[in-house]
Image 1: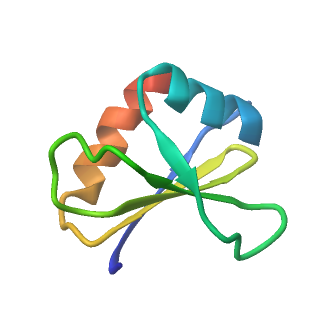
Image 2: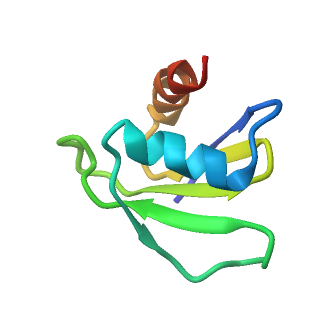
Image 3: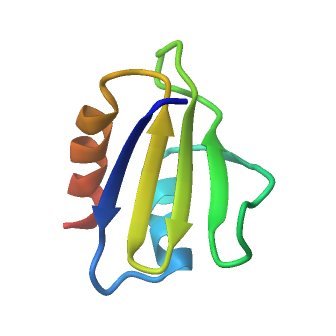
Length: 83
């Protein structure tokens, strides 16, 4: 995984970010956490892409990690979910 993008989501807690993403149809599997305050998830259905995308969720911060150069476009699209 070599591409990273962070999205600052003011006013959202960790559980609210995860619930919002799941309500939009994203399905995740839990991964081993790096830190206790960060929830690490991997996208199960990559919307037809052949890439792995990981989501690291903290309070008011969402980080995307992927092995595809277009991770910034994913971040832009996901940001629309929180408007």
